[in-house]
Image 1: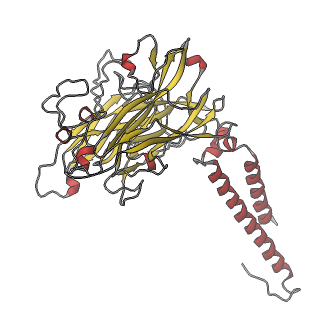
Image 2 (image 1 turned 45 degrees about the vertical axis):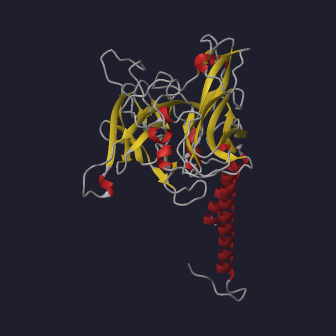
Image 3 (image 1 turned 180 degrees about the horizontal axis):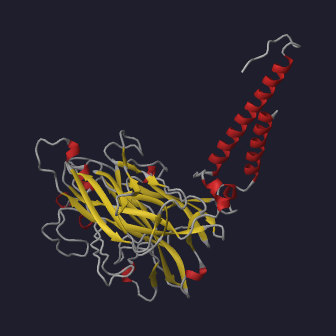
Length: 467
């Protein structure tokens, strides 16, 4: 009976796990994961037009919470996902800020015009400066197939009353940059914001662009127009960014993580006086890829490899990592100086027409989820950031960002067993566990029947089964 006892004890232990609150059983806190779906303010696009606006005080979960994920996609008025080959999602970002109580910021206001004493940035932990890449979450065309889930027992802590300046309240801003490419003369050129296709020579503030600036954010700002084929007719459409936020209530069992975003264009340079985050971290955010001019090379021989080294102004344990690249990207990675790969993030390109699988577009980026405590970054350590793009064609305005989440501590031993199982949906986990329970129960029943027949084979007319 020893084998049967083992099977039933395993079944009993699984049932005990199932009877625990979901988040406790899987390494989080005792509170359930909450989910809310919101819509951005509407925006209207016609063929070739651009939306690049900053919406302030958008809908967002309230209270002292720990964010678990943030996902978004462009939809039409009927709620249908819009494919990238019709409306290209250049990027969306969500950022936190603090505003003095009683001060109203409309959804379209430019915070730069606000009184400095009424507005405080609530940016992430670094390391770029001058208001660049200060977001908490942000993706682009890859948004539908890129995981943003933060594994238990970790979360991004927000809404902490102790961190909100006196007299202020925490609010959230959403930036949406979408380009309608229906009927475009050059879809890729439009999505890469080539200045000649937009007939742009000055930026949105009227400043003349430098002669060598061929394309990028300065040429596809809000309400600009990319060239469409002569005679092409297309209706203007009302669109939204639908975003889904998951979170848990913050308590002592949630381990907070900090957000760090690296940029391959960072001009930071090491100096003896450098300590922590300083003004030397100037991030340009975008850059160009020059075409490969060599003849006779196979396609895989045309690769633009950009690498920079960065001294870490922080230390901690790597919890999550993902890169952000544009079309033409072939992957990005974060290394130690000795060549050890801490995280590699590779693009997935679509192969069809339907939303989430659009041919020629990056529709997803792979992510890194190291074992808790498996990768530690030391304060002052030098890491290498690498970004690779195909250089078969000329590309303008590409990006090479790398997001990581870092925790000061790892789970206590009691969490270790359960954090092996990670999932984004409690229903999925419970379903999987019940399937396991059913299988084990079936095996146990079969074992009982087999043993019974073995013992009583001569009594019921059946021959014993030999194993």
